[in-house]
View 1 (cartoon, rainbow, N blue to C red):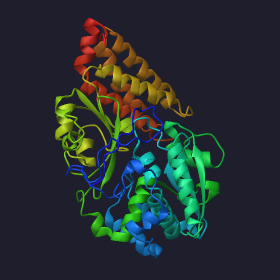
View 2 (cartoon, rainbow, N blue to C red):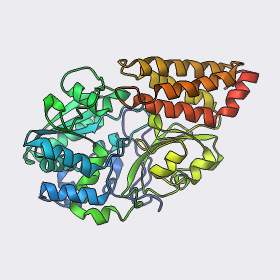
View 3 (tube, rainbow, N blue to C red):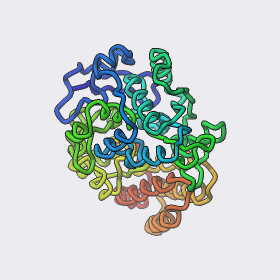
Length: 430
């Protein structure tokens, strides 16, 4: 079992392990992506990486894409799209001219899993990117990394130097702006081309026309790292963990009541409360938990504790696995105010090009702020939020407003009693 690293507060730069010795992780965790030397030791070298997992197999593209499909691996960046299907679409249009983008933008403040992976297991990420290039007959790999991740950028640059160009594909690194929307695949492509971080209407989709008009595979770095292990161990091995619908392990960024962010590798199907309990977090005793971050929703603590880690279970609660965020609402915090701050952040992270997103999210954030301050017509304001949600959903160039709407509706559902209390007694004195 791997250590469960704590990454400090949301504003700290370095990756800081929590001191748990390797091998001490509880049974509810698994060690696949995070297996190996202690995470606090920094990036794993190429020699150590190959000694631990072996050389990268020389696999036929079509055969490996079929193995990915059989494994059931889906995207770990939030969309959960089937990986084999995505690679097959690019391969079918490549003609030796495709591009692979390893997406490590990770712009959501509560997410640290991709940063940890790049900073400690860079060769696993590079292996996955090289496999993707070979399978899709791409001529270039672009490492698209959040510019604030100094440790991840340094680890990947060192790893590329260690490999010495032996992978047979050109690899370059592009630093991404620290923006929520920068990780959206069409926005990432535009940034790589030198443009502004603006999501683009589809079609055409990236697999049809991406970087410089070439077929482009944009894949989250965690997904690529999983692919590197599937290449070595096979689809059946990958499915030994998780459930039939959600196979394999997932990385979670768990924010505790102290603001510390822990990265945990867990198996889908495990009760969320069992996972967080190993970090000393009793979800059942807490007011609420944000599951899925900006594409998720707030869920009452006891319900979240009992919920299995799966797409279907979380969707039924109005949340999602998203990018693997589990963020508790502190016992001494006002849940309504916490949720409102998140909606205001999401409104501020709009790319600014679609009216429903720009005006709709800003108006919903303003209405929630009024409810925090205690507005007497609270029932009418809540109904207005629900009406606006229906008018904005599905009307942007990307899915940013759809995720924000899910958060808004979960605030109304989970913190309804707080909205009424604020209307009658004014804002919380905390």
